Amino acid sequence: MKKITAIYPGTFDPVTNGHIDIIKRASGLFDKVIVTIAINSNKKPMFSKDDRIEMLKNSLKSFKNVSVDYFEGLIVNYAKKKKAQVLIRGLRAVSDFEYEFQMSLINSKLSQELTTIFLMPNEKYTYLNSSIVRELASLKGKTDDFVPAFVRKKLNQKFKD
Image 1 (cartoon, one colour):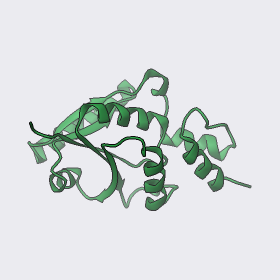
Image 2 (cartoon, helix red, strand yellow; image 1 turned 60 degrees about the vertical axis):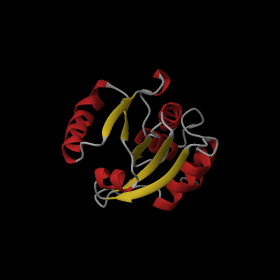
Image 3 (cartoon, one colour; image 1 turned 90 degrees about the horizontal axis):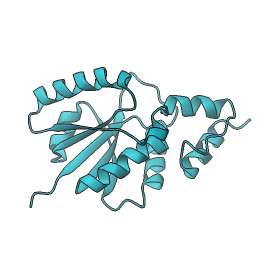
Image 4 (cartoon, helix red, strand yellow; image 1 turned 30 degrees about the vertical axis):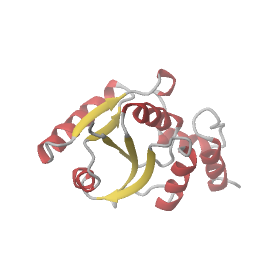
């Protein structure tokens, strides 16, 4: 039987409970899931690549078929290198769909071996994204319901007085 490897790319600045919900769903569907941080020179993330890797590894240690990595460049090239057949994208709301649909079409044009699968997080995370978490933490708001404890600790260190 063919083993299916899926990739879930993102900035993960920081990883949220919504991301983890998608990863949990993906880990139940695929033999191997690679959560990979997209390094984009146009973006200036709050956390370093190494911090984001540490937060992901800590948050995902209970998932035996999930690994953490990073990449630069085109996701289709990275997927080919990792012999992945599936690209996972999260959809929180209809507003995400248009962009994700366009990217899916471009990726399938660049690599016909790669299939994009859209997963929606639990409804309690549909409003949640990393930008909201960063802003909330910067204003000293409670992030307990939005990120794992280790990530919350990193956020608190980043925004301590």
